Figure 1: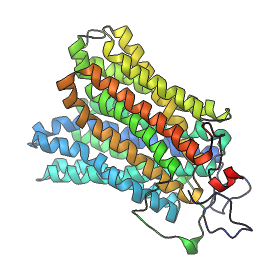
Figure 2: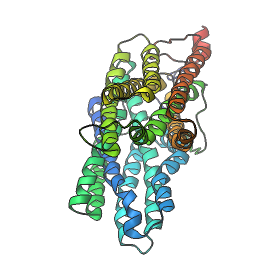
Figure 3: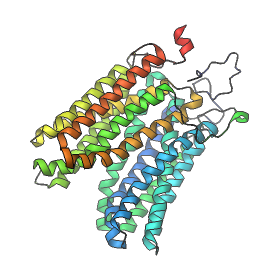
Figure 4: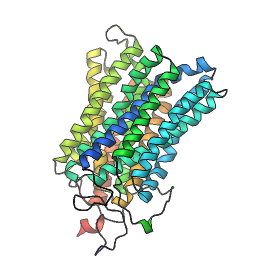
Length: 440
C-alpha cells in the first residue's frame, strides 16, 4: 500500500476519509448502528430472494424445454458475472462513494429477479434467464463491495469485527432461508409466484437501502476518477484473498458440492431421509453455526490485541474438520466434522474482512473489498470443477484432505504477508500498515 488513512500533512490529502463521530458529512446523520442494521437487513433480504429462486432452476429445463447444459450455464452465470464485476464494482465505490452503488446494486438485483418472471412467459426463456442471472451477479458484486466499505467507514477497530461478521452472516443466512421458503412456495403456488415473491423481497431491500443508508465514503469531488480495471494488489489484500480462496474452495466448492455423494457412498442417513434430505440437514447445520460464529469470532477479535491468532485457530479448526470428515462412518461423527468446518469457516470469515479494513487506506477500501471477493468466487467456482472429477478418480479422503491443505496454505500466506508488511506475525488490531510508519 502506498498510503495511510489520515496522513498527508496539514489536511492536504485528497483521499476519502473514514467517518468518525466528529467527522461527518452533512449527508451522514444516522447513527452507525442504524446504518449497520440497515445494511445487514438489505443483504439478508437479497440473499433471501436469491435463495427462493434457486430450488426452481433445476426443474426449469423440464418445464420449458431448456437443455441440461444450458440450465448449468444459467445456474453458474451469476457467479462468473460477479467474478468479472468485483473489481469494477470496488473501483466504482472508491470513485463515487457507497450510497449510489449500494442502491444501484440492490435495484439491479430486483430487476434481475423480475426477469425470471419474464423468462417464464418468453419464447426464448433460456436467453432471458441467462441475462437475468448475469445482471444478478453484477448487482451482487456492487452490494457486497459496498457493504464491506460502509462498515469499514462507520466502525472503529474496537467494533469492526462484530459488524463485519453481521454483514457476512446476514448475506449467507438469507440464502438457505430462501431455499426452504422458495421450495415451499413453488410447490404450493407455482414458479411464477415464487419468482414474484423473491422480487418483492428484493424491492423491499432496495427501498430500505434508499431510505436508511446514507453516503459514508467522503470523497474530494474534484479528484475522483473511475478506473474499473484497477484491482487492489496490495500485500494484505492478496494474502487475505488467499485465505478467502482456501475457505471457499474447500467449503462451498468441494464439501457442499460433494456431500450428498459422500453420504450415499458412506450410507449415512438422518431421520430416515435419503442422501439429498440428509445432506440438506448437514448443510443447514453447518451454515447456521457458521453464521453465528462469524459474529462471535468478530466480537472476540474486537477485544483482542490482534485478530490474527483467532483467525489462525479458526483456519486450523476448519482444516481439521475437512480432514476428519471422510473418515466419518456415522451421523454423529459426521455432524461433529461439519460443525468443525462451520465454526472454523465462520471464525475465519468474520474477522477476515475486519482485518482487511484495519490494513487498508480508506481510498482503496472499495477496490480491496471487490478484489478479495474475486478470490472467493474463484475458489467457490474451481472447487466443484476440480473436486468432483478427482473424487471419482482418487476418492473422498485424498480430495478432502487436499482441500484442508489448501486452507492451511492460506494461513501460511497470511502470516508471511503480514510479516513482510508490518514486521510482525500478529500486528495489533486496527494497525496501519504503511511500512515507513512501522519502521519508525
